[in-house]
Image 1 (cartoon, rainbow, N blue to C red):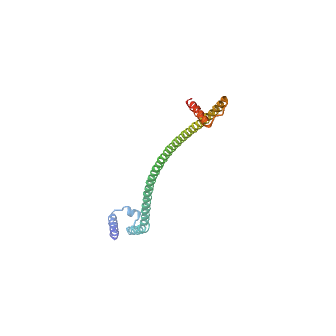
Image 2 (cartoon, rainbow, N blue to C red; image 1 turned 180 degrees about the horizontal axis):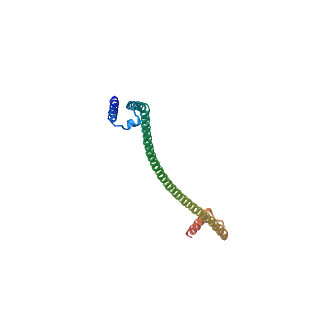
Image 3 (spheres, rainbow, N blue to C red; image 1 turned 30 degrees about the vertical axis):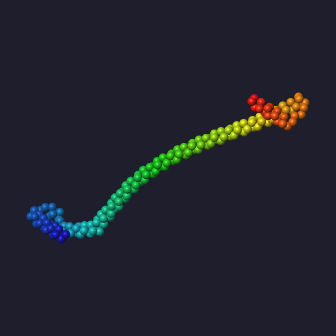
Length: 188
């Protein structure tokens, strides 16, 4: 800084010496070179103090703020990217959940259909079993009734024959007539 000051003072002296011969602006307005040099020195001191204590801290603060703003913008972009990724991931999860739900519904429908078909088949089988048992019972009852009817008819035939013949038959004769009547009735 000192060489700059010396150069300024020397330039001012040379300018004053060259203007001394010819009246110029300096003499016209009454400018003193030493006051000008003093003003330049005061200005340089003021500039140095302002630069060190005013401009430099202000510039550093502005740079720090710019760095924070840049960092905030970068974080905002990263957050936005993560948000977009999370939105895509949640959309994928929702889609997968919908597919899983649809599969479960289809499986439930299939299972219920199979269950209904099985129940229906069991009901049909049970009904067929009941019908078969009823037919067997009816056939058995029919046979029993026919046997009772044959026995009754044979008894009636024997009783009628006894009355017609007006004689009492022995047990052996009665059994023979019953057996003959039963055979004849069985053929019918």
